[in-house]
Image (cartoon, rainbow, N blue to C red; front, top):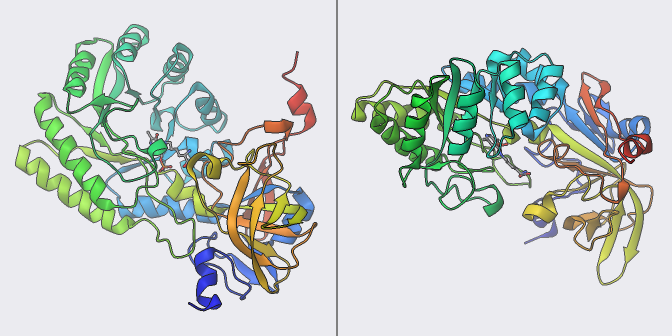
Length: 436
Ligand code: LLP
């Protein structure tokens, strides 16, 4: 393999081309600068500082609209946990999506965005009394029950007719990382289909006079690549619907649709998903003689991941057996490599040069604070250089922490050459506010 062939597979290139499919729509090179949403990365870094999470608004909205276009008969529910931010929730409302929240906190953001309660679904394997009360008070349209305790608590708290869905564990292996594989038996989510617990949960909800069964829910995992996993889920869920003995109007298939993180990885086959799920659903419903339920899907990552780019400034370079390029962020803004072994591409903005493999590390006090291993950067990479990491729109802002009391970065939305923060940078004042 020549070096030129090798470079894209490792994730970086000095060629004036961008890795296909990873960057926000319309991202391009202008000289050696990287232009995102019409705004040069060097200008974004100068204006907003680094680290900086850049989010391309058009990419987010276009991906949301693509789900609606692919499945016009379905309700498309944005998984709010993937990028919790009122402005993003407003974009979702404006393109016709519903929203799922998994805590009173995410619901507070939805309220701040003025998101219509009738299009909000509340999730979570544990909802505290406060979560449930907040959901009931705002009037969220559906609450997805995840335990018998919760059904009882909800039955006692709810006013007449609160719509409830049952979260089912269908026993489908989505072939993804164990930490985000939620459709298999022997993990904390949902009511097992195989053990009969899901059917029992349906009966418990039906028995509660203050609750109304709206449908069944499942979510087999995240970063799911194979449409076949969803087909199998539909088969199992329709089998359950047939044994419920009550009409099931809605079937929520959850989210999990994969996003490409590295060159050569493909996007989720949305068109194939829509066709095959639609076909399997109508076939299975006819087979079991049950009415076809309305489908809901809950994409998060596949809408926002590739819309995000994080900019870092190089603070130090250590050359030894390996070359470590240390940046001004790290596991506080991206714990995904440490949590899931996630891999990222990295690009130096501003110049090219002869490439050498390096390890990009963060500023935190852990040897595991590594952002990207074995990526190719110009051999003369030095302090002051600007690095851009694509595919940081999903579960980056959401998972960010204050480790080492480092303030969390801003999220800066770009569109048509304009940039505006939609989450501001966390300051020392913010950090000090909580200490007594
Ligand atoms: N619906 C439910 C019930 C979920 O729990 C999730 C994600 C989604 C939908 C959206 O899944 P998505 O389309 O975004 O894959 N922190 C991990 C991902 C955790 C996913 C949690 N649940 C990561 O950074 O990879």
